[in-house]
Image 1 (tube, one colour):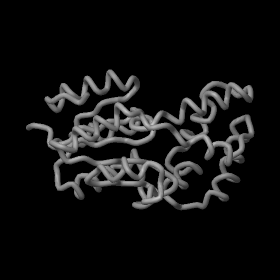
Image 2 (cartoon, one colour; image 1 turned 90 degrees about the vertical axis):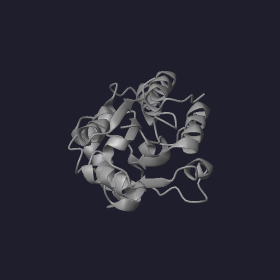
Image 3 (cartoon, one colour; image 1 turned 120 degrees about the vertical axis):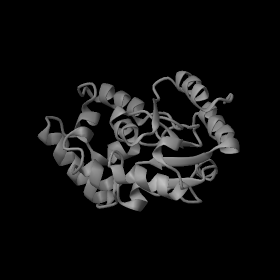
Image 4 (cartoon, helix red, strand yellow; image 1 turned 90 degrees about the horizontal axis):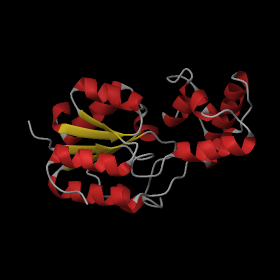
Length: 205
């Protein structure tokens, strides 16, 4: 069956990855490489990061909990510092991909976030390009929970096999692939765009 829908993660796909900011922070403070990611992935369904993305705790509560979790893993890190590292920069080439996909396909934005991207958001003009936006902070579930992907399919009125999904994390792609979606891991945007062009069958740049 032809692909009729393109689904995109936000941070690490349309925005530059927060992992780049994490790495700079770790280097500046003498932390082990990948430490912040290791805190976020430890007990990843119930840790502070997961609960914040499901809107189950406030930013103040997250800051305290993250500091405790990081200390338990060997290095105390400010949760407020981590929140400050989340803002990425738009990748113009990926915004163009979304624009072109939107001309021929249904499009969805599937993002784990801590604050809903409303009309006052600096990226609102990009968010508005999508037919459907699924935000963990709004719906109360997050990737890689299967319900997150099911919501996207329901709101777009598609079957999983109708969709291609782009994310920068393999853990988020796995359940989508198991449901029947075509998946693309975004590491180098240019490579990912070429892979997406091959899937959808029309130029994206």
